Image (cartoon, rainbow, N blue to C red; front, side):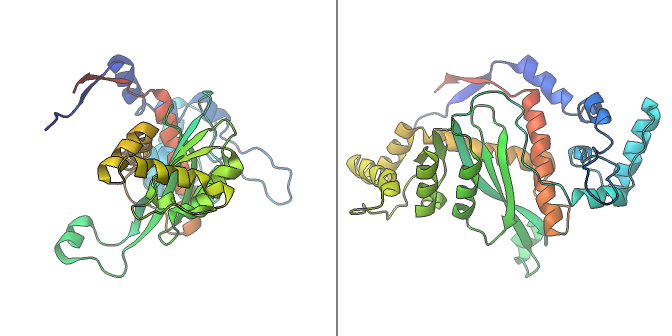
Length: 310
């Protein structure tokens, strides 16, 4: 049996500094955040908003709404700033309105995109109770769909849906917003659907999606399904068994898709596997804010590893 490969972080000093910076209040309550503290007038009718949408601190430090109000007030007092802090009710109402497109922090050219989804619990029994006694009817969760750049590990697109929305329904929505510089998109077998291949065909990129195990070569298919037929033929040419699928994935560089799972793992480790908001609109905004905070942490520094043993 082959031994497991081992890796070593080459930039441990810089990465260690970035981990320390994640807890620095100057990162989340920076001069730029203070300058944008007051909301920009929109020019529309009605009373303008008083505060901006900068509420990342709540999820970074895992603060309830009332504790967040006290935390912000103490920061303003210690720093001797001449700004007012919102009440917890104002923060709650403003959080319902978030959910914009994520702003890219890196200027690196994007050529690949990995897409996957994970579940976030809303309410219900804990894992111990489920393991011991099973789950009840009130166990509810949402699906968080992420599109990540494998080079920068930055989340480019995020969408929160209910637990009944299949992954392949969200895939075309991401492709419509993807820049034309992206040449390849990676997804698991859940995206082996005609609409996903059609989305790649319209976008002009190549899908790296493994066909399902019982996939068959289609005779005279539409042009956008040629990529799928090509994948089925390649797997059959390699033997058509489990080892052939593994070899096909290795030749296609399918391992990049695992970076999507790594991104979701980091998301849950840093912010937990549940949602605090109780309304669906608030949960969508929460997914957006947490993804934005994760991008800031990623931009501070990521480990660069190299293989040292097989």
